[in-house]
Image 1 (cartoon, rainbow, N blue to C red):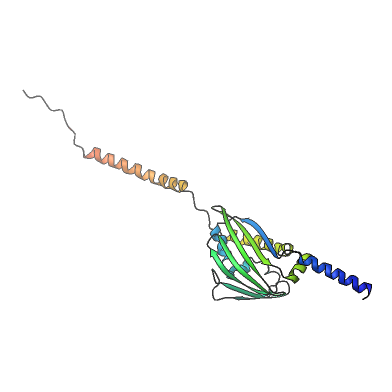
Image 2 (cartoon, rainbow, N blue to C red; image 1 turned 135 degrees about the horizontal axis):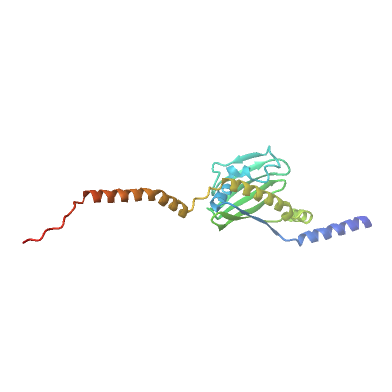
Length: 224
């Protein structure tokens, strides 16, 4: 065996040993605050038919083929796609949904390489009109994805897409939030102000009618 070949084998062996020591699991997470109620945000996440309005992968391949299942929202809803090398091929299925709180999905990638991951959107109401949204993905590496992760970490690769997607979701949800309800005090005060002149006129008319109907009484004379 030549020295060059021996060095190459040693280097490859060392690289393989290093890759084998890398973590078996990965976690990617990003958050943002949306100026809209949790119910409004939840409606955009829990329905695959509206994902095209905010998904970060839509712009990467406008010609991407999308296939929605018979059920598009809630548990059991499915969404499959097939596109260019930037979006690949895969499918998602909603496995759990708590209105206004959380949507959990199972992600299965088929191309460019096969893998599975758990996706979770967690909603936390920070006020009656604002919601913190956290998008997280958890999965496990095989040897090939471990090696790829050494060169291009999953957090850096997918994290940017999550950030863009959350920014899009924020715009969509804020545009669809319900208008604020008028304060009860203002509404009640306006009603009272409008009713006051009517009540005062009714009272004056009643008083005038009473005075007109009352007979006048003269002082009674003394009997002799």
